[in-house]
Length: 194
View 1 (tube, helix red, strand yellow):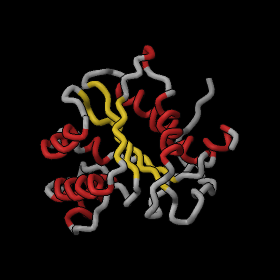
View 2: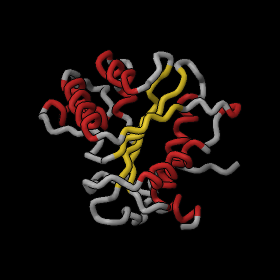
View 3: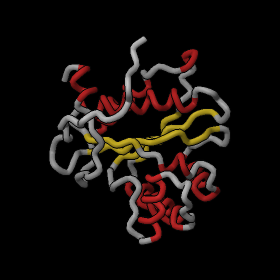
View 4: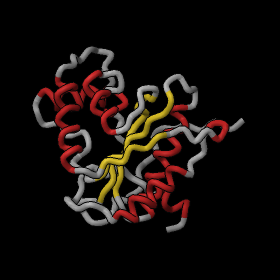
């Protein structure tokens, strides 16, 4: 797939087959992320690649439990409201049962932590599309970065104490076969030419 086509046809996938992608495909996606630009070429984004089904199940249960403890206020971000409501109902699976979760982390206090990680995540999503894999940006662990239970769990998996969770990406074979590549109407991201 040509680069611009891979960018323009990338869509989020939220339903996955119960089948692990070939390890070489996962490596290709990871390497695409590792080649992303970073401030001053710091290359500080840490990728934690979770493919163990039991670990994913335990993490999903923990995330649901911690979101269920939260209260919704009028200032609660709309996606976070959904996560809290579904968690309270006992129906929330933040990773949509995808077989792969790649968590990004970066140094606490580093001014480019989010931007660098976003570049890594976008590269991986475009690579996944080009490789006929589904992917979706996952922010729930970032929202729970300061949650003691979640941090403890993630530190056991390799998150460093001096790192902040900046995002995540789920990956797998889309339930429908190939990724959805239908164009989306652009209603935002305005452009001003000067």
